[in-house]
Image (cartoon, rainbow, N blue to C red; front, side):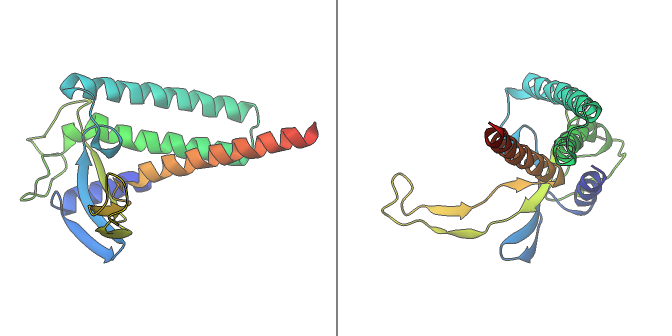
Amino acid sequence: MLIDQFSKIYVKTHFYYGEEVKVFDWFRIFFVENNGMAWGTELGGHLGKLILTIFRIFAIVGLGWWLHASIKKKASNSFLIAVSLILGGALGNVIDSVFYGLIFNESTPEQVATIFHENTYGSLFYGKVVDMFYFPIWQGNLADWIPYMGESYFTFFNTIFNVADTAITIGAVMLILLSKNSKKEVEKGD
C-alpha cells in the first residue's frame, strides 16, 4: 500500500495529465485518472461514484474480517498473503477515491497537480484513482479474416493500471491457484 501511494503521489505531482514516458517500446509510464471502476467504467455520475466508493469501503471491511478470521484459523501463509495483497490493493485505491479530491488540485495537460492545494478538484468520496502503468505489447492492424475486427487497429494489452491493481490481480490469481490445489489435495485424499 505504501509503494502504491508513493507511486501515485509522485506521478500526480510530477506528470501532466496524459503525459507519457517511454521506458521500453512495450512499457510506458502514462498518467491517467480513473473516475470509476476498471477500464474507466462509471456507475451513473455523482451518485454512482458515491455508491461505488461506499461499496469499496464495505468490501475492505469484509476483506479485513476475512483476513482476521483466517489468521485465527491458522490458514496457510500463501492464503494469508493472497488475501493481504487484495486487501492492500483495495485500500490503496479507496484512499484515492476517498481523499484525493480533497487534497489535490486538478491534473490537466497544462498543469501538474499539487498536494494540499487550496483549490481542490473534489470532495470527500469523490477522488479519482491514479493509474500509470501501460504495456502496449503489440500494436497494429488485425488480419482482414478476423470477424468484426478485421483490418482495424488494435493494441494488445491497452489497460492502464497501478500498483494497487497489480496487488489485487496477483492476490486473486493466487486464490484461484490455491483453490485448485486444495481441490486436488482433497481428491487425492479420497
